[in-house]
Length: 202
Image (cartoon, rainbow, N blue to C red):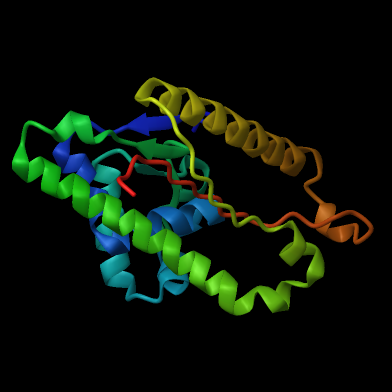
């Protein structure tokens, strides 16, 4: 997997992978774990091993995940990893096909439901993280007046900023593989950041 690589989905069969709630949860669980077995992923998403194994094979068939060669060589336990850092799709790619547009809408709703569930969990549990993390967390809403090209420019700038910080996190992990053994250094945690920017009529 290339750092920062993202897959653009233009095929409705591929898009349907993320209109399914369990496949989406598995993809995110594998994002956090980086590499994991089906049994470990089943624990993370609280589903049966047989069901998780089936959906992992479906994701692999469509090229979203792959076996880790150095860990899957003996075939006793298959390890999985993502083939891309993330994925994206545009509604305009499916606008001419009502059925495909329905799948795109379902995928967007699943993505939003996942994001909201994570945010609700943070709201319920933020006190357990301590003041440093609660003070550092972000919750912001802005009402802007933009043209469509200006919104596209803003989206590109924000994406570039997030990618910069994602790359910084990867470099820190590579440079400090034993950081957890050095309590004097700030601890890294997974941070979920999601943004939505869209036009609306007040």
